[in-house]
Length: 459
Image (cartoon, rainbow, N blue to C red; front, side):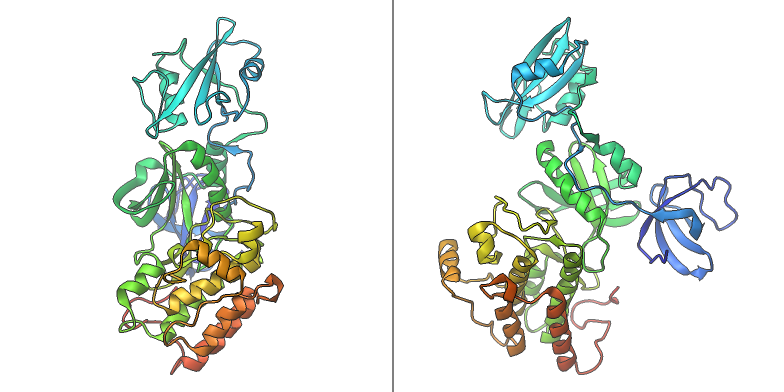
């Protein structure tokens, strides 16, 4: 296989006695390729755990495996969801001291129940959800169920016995085991967290360093939500493209840490708003549009739908490359209904009305994103309420072109906003049109260095 710099791989065997200049590793270690061109049959690589660098035999590594995108992976194999008390009792048979499970409370929605077997009986402890924390006794409070289980596995305060053995839900696999086996589990001791760079609905995002590499870390403390984000992570392990934010790995520690490459210039909307027309010209806007289009074309080729494409979910790297991020809503293109909370101004009419998503609904969102880019980060449908946007768009209203927007680009927006999904172009056709426009507007072959937006070459 032809590898490229930045690709992560897993070793197939041990190399415990490396020759001078070679890297030491054991079977199953994760390495990052640094250079493929210096020595025939060898790659220069960095060890993801020790940080050491050296040469490796190209035959001794395999591609890092992707995680399966299914619901069998679980951080909490002992979590059985919405089952009744009698069902929990039957699952905890034959009786064994310290055998336990957690279920959702049917009588008190939003709360949980810890069920523990002891002396042939099953004891049920209501876990109350209060002020974003969980408690059994109003003395000990926990951010999530995982922390609670860890505590009561070592202490029997307020419970009849310490928790000894989890009763696993049938069909679940341990997320920790699977992440470790496929090479995606990172080591919390190698991570240094820095400043908070963002606050989302489900958790905070921090700048940090992992093995001397600058990273972004999304921390989801609530484990039930973290379980949902495991699907996002599984999708990201399958994707490798220069215009998609790259996943480096996952840490399981007081919830879920999703570690990605750090995009130093923030999201595209803020980037454009804070620089404006005096700094960024139309060719550079086209380049951003093309970056996003190429990332989306790749997702389209994988039959994946993003469902939340917007300038806020496109990040800008140190060398001003735009990359699509936030795969929290990414799903296989099944055109199935979904009740997720929808970003109305970016969502296609058929997705708003019937909650049906496809690549063509992503194309609609891309049209709105183009409008954001060429208006230098303005909020779409200015001065319109969400209710008005929904009604007017359904009735055929479309935004006017932003000031000084090239006519050809506005034509593309209008094509993206065709009422009938089948009449909208695919991302490959949009990329061709944007490339043609780029050639027309570039006074010379596109420079690798982008004026006015910091130095550094594109990668």
